[in-house]
Structure formats: structure tokens, C-alpha cells
Amino acid sequence: MDRRDFLRAAAITAGAALTAGTGACAPARMASGGGSLSEWAARPGIQIYTVRDQLTTDFEGTLARLAQLGYKNLELFGSLGTRTPRDVRALLDRLGLSAPSTHITATPGADLRQTLEGYAVIGHKYTAVTGATGGGGANATVDSIKRQAELLNQVGQAGREFGIKALLHNHVNEFVPFTTNPSLRPYDIYLSDTDPAIVAMELDIGWATVAGGSALEMFRRNPGRYELWHVKDMDELATVTALAQTERQRAAKIVPVGEGDIDYRPIFEGAATAGLKYYFIEQDTGPNWAGGSFTAAELGLRNLKRQLG
Image (cartoon, rainbow, N blue to C red; front, side, top):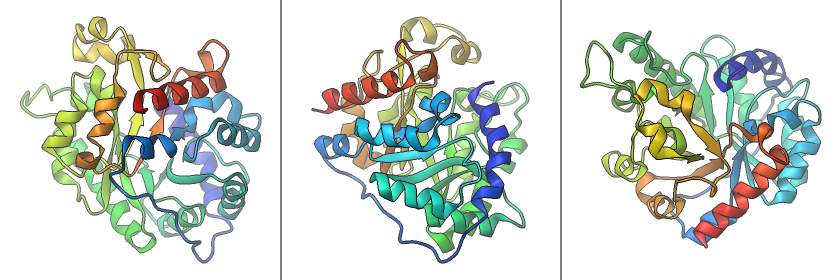
């Protein structure tokens, strides 16, 4: 099961827990934009998809281990099981962690407000959106991507009451031009058709690089739009990017940050231009890494701190 399919399936399971036990919103924890390299190194985050094999057997123990490794911020993923938002917030507080973002998607509709209320209790400031988890590929059309952009705006508008923005996370297909309009890409529509006040771009720098993009150039073209990053590294980039864009995601070689070809120091030097608020180290192949997913998480954090040192 790939990451996108896993997300869709897990969101169904998580929905009931996220809408239970909500009440008055707890104070949200914020991070300011900008910051020096050392400041960014001091508040690392991780997308817990990296350690998804551990989450399924020991949710609390997995979060505790990530805190021990030195992570400060989590981006949630998968299922919270029967835990209520208050349960999750209490666990985070006990471990000294924050969860400013989630990929447990919010669904437009009758239950959206209750879902967002629960997210606010946990401390989320950003949420992925059901039906708008990134698009592109052979079946994408201009109209289908515009509908996704509208879903992002709907959830972002509803989230204003709770200080929560919708987020758009990319893979590779978002940067592949439409066959019917080679001058236009899905990502261009996400940028033009979403309201920056209520929708944030979560730039997966690894996948954007595989697609042939430059994070720094993207920051310059659309300053302030990239409040969230996925910090992901890729090996053998020259070989992968020599392929047709439609083949690159399948051929990508995902490795711990610092073990591949992406130099994150100059990218973090552009954090103020990007509008960065939070970043999350992510390694999709974490469970298959030698030594296991915790080893991958530890190595990626150690290497990133060295790059930013």
C-alpha cells in the first residue's frame, strides 16, 4: 500500500476518534517564521509516516521514542484509534511535543466543524483535506484540479474560526504538465486558485526536486506560500531526473536526510522567503531502512543538524 492509499484508508478509521471528546479549544502552540539555521535545527519535526510500522503496535511508545531522539514537532498520520483529541493532547504535553500539522484529512461536509474543533484541541494549525491530497497524472484535468483547489479553500475558510489552514502536499505528478495544455501544470492551479490566507503549500522538497524543480526558485516566485516543508532526501538524482517525469516517482531512491544528493543548508537559508513555519523530516522508506525506521529517523535528524551547523 503506498502512502496516498494508506492515508485514505487510515482517515476513515481516525474520523470517529477525532470528532469525539472535543470541547473548548486549548491554547495553540505557534512557531514564528524566519529564524537562523541554528534555530531551525533546534526545533525539528518529523512526519510520523516515517515510523508507521512502529505506530501500528505502540502509538504512545513511538511518540516517546521520537521525543527521546530530539524531535519537537510531529505531523500526524494514520489512525489515532480510540484516542480522543484530549487524549492525544495530554500525551503530547506529557512528552514535550507539539503536533502543528496533520495528514489525517479533514472532510468537507456536515462534520467538518466538529473535526476542526478536535484538531484545535490537539494543537493543529494545518490539515490535509480529503479529496485534495495532491493530484496530477494521466486522469487529471484542469477542472478536476480546480475542484480540489476549491475543497482546500472550503476547509481553509471553515478553519479560520480555529486558526487552522488547509494544506496541499505534493508528490511528482503535480508538476507534470497537462497533456491537453503543456504550458500548465496542476501545481500552477493550486497556487493560483487557493487563497494564501487560508491555504498553505506544504512543499515536499524531495519530490519537487525529483520532478525537476528548485525549492529556492519556487520560494522566489511565490514568497510566503511555503509555510510547511517535508524535508526528504533522494539518492542518484541525476539518474532519476534523466527519466521522463511520469517515471521519476517510481524510480526515486529515498534515503535518510544527509545520505542523498540534496543539500538542505541553502534551502533553509531561504526559509524567510518561503514563509516557513514548520518542517517535518520524512523518509517514506523508513521501515525498510537498515536498522529500522527509528534508525532512519535518528540518522536523518543528526545529518540535518550537521548540515545546518
